[in-house]
Image: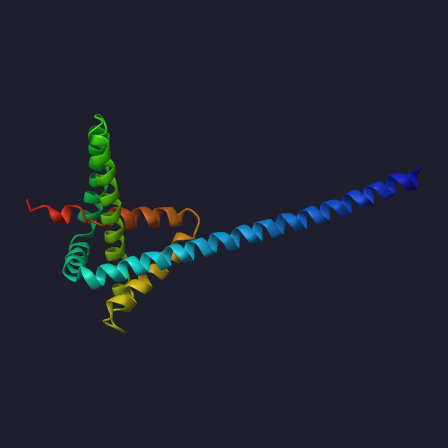
Length: 178
């Protein structure tokens, strides 16, 4: 009788070990999936930034100069711009006619925001690699790499992402200087 319970206990312990192995393999697969997704996102961000560097060279240069000259002002206007954009989006959605316009404005705002993020990343890459190369594509690649690595750090990654997103002033570069 004791042998019977001992055998059952050993069988359960062996089953628990198999479950832990499956659990660790599942976590490893999830980690690999997350890493691949992050690398793909950074690659797409690099491609988007490279297209902007090629097609909107002067605009990207203006953004970089503004970010370097007044980083805290850029950050503050990014926060204010996000809040104002949210209020305008909600106010535009009040009417049926305004909903498509609000959605189009939201799409264009996201494109402008990611363009500004590319300018921030290129500026950060230039700060690190500027003494080695003057190639803006290398600067953008370095910025994307740093963003990928810093974004993966728990707690710090969220702060870095928020800082990069709010530092771009792409929407406010369209407005005349006050």
